[in-house]
Image (cartoon, rainbow, N blue to C red):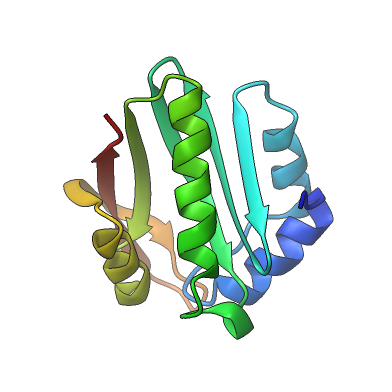
Amino acid sequence: MSLTAAELAALSARAYTHMDSWTEAAFAATLDQPSSLLVSGEGAFVLGRVVLDEAEILALATDPAQQRKGAGRAVLQAFEVQAAARGVATVFLEVASENLGARGFYEACGYQVTGRRKAYYHRPGGGRDDALLMSRALT
């Protein structure tokens, strides 16, 4: 299942209640990059990029109606398998420190906090939130 930039933007708008979601144009520009890797499934997607032996998850979204049903975990695992097939040894991501649900999800999937970017994210209602850097070795 492959989603268009418009479908990715709509899904992320439903899922990203804790922060501003990506625009259709931002998704389209990222998908046009040769390093991009998109894995989508029923109600969820992971978009990242692969550079040499590293992958960075840029966006992971699960439709609220599909949350806690395994859709997010399924696309994350498929992303990791496809990244490993491209020679990736480590996957990195950033998550808002106040997004406890996402943090718990990534930790349950084997990701560990490796750093922090202070005041990185803009909150929709104003203010800022730190980004936690997380990673997981695939090999």
